[in-house]
Length: 187
Ligand SMILES: [Mg+2]
Image (cartoon, rainbow, N blue to C red; front, side, top):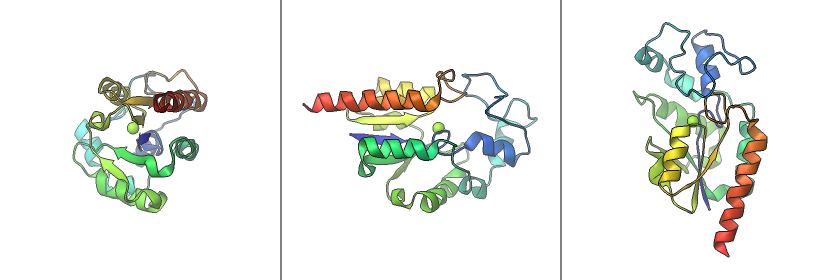
């Protein structure tokens, strides 16, 4: 089975670091926005326009985003479930594309074993197949991927529909279900 693995909001902590970058307050313990609402860019409590927000994030920002607190754990579990050789990073460009170079530099430094195994594109559902699972934090990506015939694992975060559920227990269950279904389909 192949696994397409998202970066922002799954492995890397984009939203917290964007707040830090712009000097805005943010906390996961006391999430400042509407739970389940993905649209937190630009942050509702900032004066920035959408364009200012995205255009202000330089290549160095993308290159240096820290890991999510559970990012390493998620990666380890996915590698254990599918095998590293079956995993491909899949990340979307931002509106002005400025994140792509910084992001690839991040991968080269943090995950050199994936330096030749990544895809960049917003249309994630084109990678869908019954033999492919998408691990992502955006409901719209998960829904489109499932609709296109792929398998899906939604990583629960404050900005998606599973915000009320602890991330790792839910992640473990979903991964188990997807792996078991796959094994059955192989028999
Ligand atoms: Mg994401």
